[in-house]
Amino acid sequence: MKIKTKLNLGVGLLFLLIIILSLVSAFYIFSIKKDTENILKANYNTLEYSRNMLLSLDEINSNTEKAITTFETNLDKQTNNVTEVGEDDATRNLKKNFDVLKKNSTDETLKSQIRQDIFEIMKLNMVAIKQKSDVAKHTAETANLWIAITGALCFLIAFNLLINLPNNIANPIKELTESIKEIANKNYSERVHFMSHNEFGDLAKSFNTMAQKLEEYHNSNLYKLLFEKKRLETLINNMHDPIIGLDNQGLILFVNDEALKIIGMKSEDVIGKTATTLALTNDLMKSLIVKNLKNESQMLGQKTLPMKIFADGKESYFEKENVNITIQPTGEDDTIDIGDVIILRNITPFKELDFAKTNFIATISHELKTPISSIKFSLQLLEKGQNGILNEEQKYLVESIKDDSERLLKITGELLELSQVETGNIQLNIEKSNPYEIVQYATEAVKMQAEQKQIELVIEAEENLPDIKADSEKTAWVLINFLTNAIRYSSEQSEIIVKLKSDSHQVSFTVIDTGKGIDNHYLAKVFDKYFQIPGSHKTGTGLGLAISKEFIEAQGGTIAVESELGLGSAFYFKLATV
Image 1: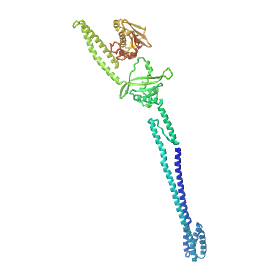
Image 2: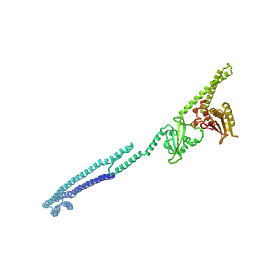
Image 3: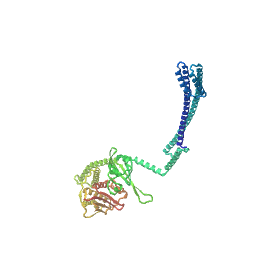
Image 4: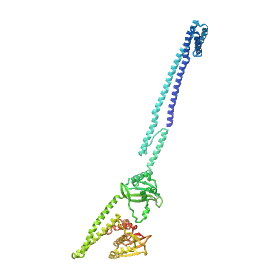
């Protein structure tokens, strides 16, 4: 039976019993009232009329006319109020005797007879009152009995409903609640068993179906994928590096808490919005999406400067990495672009250490330069023989000290140059410069070194090249560094080519050697500070190419290398024309 039907039947039955109880009570109350009114109207009034007639009868001698009138009035009322058996005959006899008395008002015998008639009427009504009182009492007792029976029946039914109906509703709800808790605890094998064919039975059936589908879903690959997705989201949120994920339309798919901190926005204000829309009101977001990975990869040699962002209560340095995400759809040969992930690596501690290192190097280099210069000056005095003639062994020692001093002086000079570049104190004198003169100056500077190894320096320069915007001294220094490295790694009696040509509003300077070349694994690192190719002669500091890169990029140019192992190398840089 349906719960609704049970409730309707229970409440309806209670309502019906209340109506029956009300009707029974009203019926018996009306019956008692009717019996009471019948006594009052039929008998009590007759007694009242009889009493008045007796009083009038006693006054006939003294006030005959008034007494007769009063007697006649009450007699008429009694005539109209005859209700009991025999009362009609007694009333007629009374009236007959009274008519005779009016003619002879002094007849005492007749008066006595009239009194007997009145007493007879009163007796009949007194007996009737007693009988009707017994009837009313019986009616009241019957009323009490039926009201008690009906009330008891209502109480029993109501008590039964009070005990059973709430349990019938509450117990299935309690069982269902416990089952829902089990489902919430991932116990998807939980089932509810309601055998009744009511709403709870339908609910149990639906719940079991839901639990079965949840169990299937939990055991399916989709659940595992969503679980892994949730795990990845948690992992990304717990990473200390700010991370922002975008789809191929620039829509932001996810952003971790660290990224929200530095951009100063809430998750609901970022996720689902396009990056270009947010960039209109957020300067940091604008700087993050100003370039995508493809554009960055097309900018050869372009240095990516760290981003300075106020984070963690101080100015922090972040290095942006834009990871392009591509997939290869099943059954297809081509990959498609599905989005980008922007990662900001916090390099503040490394930057602080780098600043400390740079300051330390600058200080040490500056302090070393003076004593090294003094050593060189002292060696020059020894070579002039002012303090005596040196023997061959002494000359050899002086020459060794001189070479080491030159090397130390070169190293300290490079370190000072590097510290100037890193601290931003590099002084550039950008002016209109002649590329031919720069090449001529550089080749003359290394001519002696080339002749010692019988290496020929060949200049291949296009005619009528325009002037360039450059610092001639720094540019020549870079070209000399290229040539020095080429001479060092070239074999004797080989050839080094210096190419000078125009390249779309730029002039390209290229130094090509025929040395052993550079392995592809190391090409991306040759311009890093302190890097030296494994297996090479470590005669330098590993700073020359790093400083060269800084000098060229500070002038707005690009620098790069092309090389194959065993086929030599080609180092080049490009500077804009005037």
